[in-house]
Image (cartoon, protein in one colour):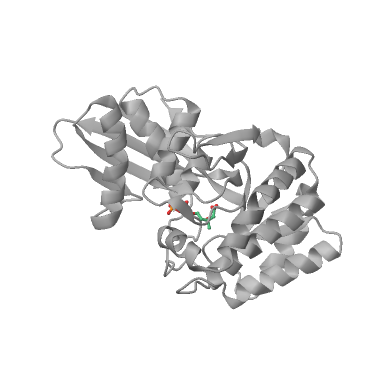
Length: 322
Ligand code: DP6
């Protein structure tokens, strides 16, 4: 009763921020992302009668307290479906350094869901697996299918899942991630989602996000970078406006974050195919066309406060290892 699964991280072009149901992680809006090839989590789940409690080790660190409880709660769902009461050992590795400032909950919960479901022979469809991953971390729903992915907000557990609209080979976009801070964020996304509704701007964000998503999906399908760039930056800026105006306010940007935003805008004005998007942290994902990547990398490296640049290209869906 053991299985190993892997899943890529992903970067949202249209963001998830705020829930209609926090316990089920039913989001306040649908979102859109690209899986990040090369950045993934590999997780082995082993159910055994010899264990008296769940145990989880991530990158060699034994989890305790709330982090372990989040994993136990996630495994409970699969155990309930399978009618199994066995405890499990979870061993997980990220192939990017933990604390590198790259979100790992999406790849972690997608890999954990697939490994747990396979170890218990649950035979879930991709949509069911995506909905299951969502319960652990909302953005993990989007790391189950491959390539360019829409997470439909849905209205209940079953209907809130992600699906691919184009495979990774559809468009060779490059994500250059400018690492500015590797510090643990003061307010994590789970808490942040709860604060979203306290911003007077969240209603305006939600009223307009479905239209942005539709246009964004079309821009990806038509490989229209100019249109995509405007939408991606707008959606990121609107989410950060909500964050910055919630109670208490969340300001994730650091001075180098803003320096990168300015540089990316200048480059695009000069005709270089690049745009920025920022999650709940200080690092900046710079999406660019392959022909612009070398120039963008050089420009980002020259900005004071950019410690490192990591690169990713569109990645596939979660997979099982034999
Ligand atoms: C800003 O999926 O990390 O990255 O469900 O609490 O684990 P939890 O939140 P999470 O939220 C992601 C927020 C975001 C935007 C996005 O990826 O869509």
